[in-house]
Image (cartoon, rainbow, N blue to C red):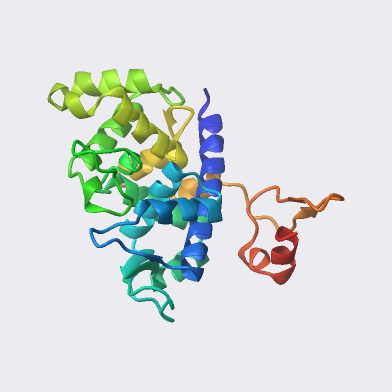
Length: 269
């Protein structure tokens, strides 16, 4: 496909992801979730968050892992303290407020760079380990020092392709194994598919191809934020309320409008 199409798909993915991240932070701020004694979140709590936010469990797991690694949520005692339970609780940090107020491209850069170096595998959440126990979100069972190496290997292979050229899961797995045969056990289609799904969600990959901003992010270039700013749609200053009381928002809202009482009332109808 074309570079413009790849970047356009990625821009849409970024807007969706940031909206969901903000929703998860808001939900945890209103109702912090207790941490398990063994660490992480319980299955019931994750399902409750899924129901409250409307974000599916696999995607929610990715958001939680990114938010924790980026310092947007942490386990501790929130203020005010919840009335039920003894804690600690997973809740937003002060950094979450700064994050929400930051420009869209800056928020993307924080999450994308966090994902690149994330020492864990969110794709395992919901599955079971060799001992039969489920992999819990935000738990040490997801820890993997090899995960960042696999992500960079995948993106480096995509970056070597012509602009706009993409791959599917099977092709990506074969290419990664060919380049790193000793890593073959962990580069099978299932884990590589998880990496591609996460990369698509983060706007790092679009239609199987690496995006322009992601190329700069991978190379450590300082203008990755500027590159994402150029492909994102401009914030708009209006929304449309239809006769059936459904709301259409044809793009990302300006922050002051998104926080206004008028927008909140319309979106709650």
